[in-house]
Image (cartoon, rainbow, N blue to C red; front, side):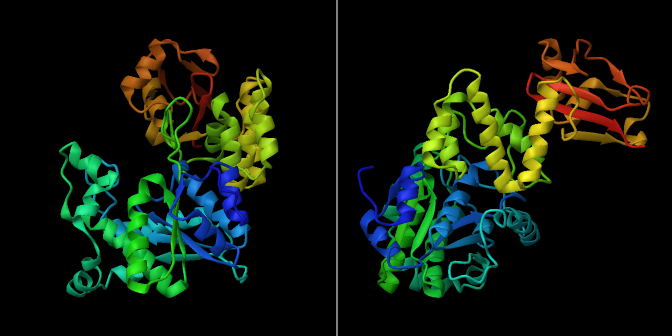
Length: 418
């Protein structure tokens, strides 16, 4: 990237590695130096929490506000009823209004940790729901006033759609309408709030370009699009997944300790890059920490885990997670903040197999995986190798909590509710 920006926001996006592409670098840059500008990212409500794969977009909104502009978090209460087909092999399950509202309520909790909605400042964030303007659209009016601006030929050429059709996988008319609705969101946000910027992952490029084109045609205003790279880890894995599943941002779906541990387990090659994207440490410090080698890189990983966890869950949760990790890994103890499975006497009955406990504690996804873990000497019970997949655990064995381990880095407590 050779463009030398004038605005603080574009400078941060380039310097910290957020920028994949922009529809007009110079035009956006000039707009941003004129004063507070609103920019938005849309989030569909397909689950009760966003996962760590969305964190790069949340950090972009945070930096937008920190550099003096107004972030808009647009919840897809309307578009979730259709489902984004971008780069998917199949159609998303359709959700009902009650489930969508419940998901939005869960997702709202995350944003408040990163973005200021309540200060009353000129750049205080807005949280909006596109159901406000999509739910009551008149279909014929929408086709006549909005649909006429879209070329089906062009829509079919977008990579997100083309890749699906090239694989001869069905793309329903319902899904095909998604990009028109998302484009309409940008038009409405520009009309209502003067929004000049839409951001998203690079898989949203086609949708963003559609929104810019529609807004320019209908209003003749200048609007811009900016995308972030789709992140994978250095070993090629999709960002947002761990051995035990999705890395959720809501604390009631993934504990702060497990969130902290995800970042502590970052591969050496990703530390510097992740520090720039997911923390606010100065870039020079991110580079210094990322260049450490040997055992010193582990302290950089702890710094990464602490900084990211502090932003989401607070400094106390980060400190507690680090203390638990040191207790578990360095001293061989139990630790006070480990994921805990609490069983009632009724749950336990006459006893429960160790395989069931490993699955219920989240250390394995299935009984088959738990048995394989035991057979390959990857499971431990109170730090001792677990070799008997038929072992039964009864109330006597749970007189004190027991610690289960899968490999060297994943642990859980099991205790009896008395």
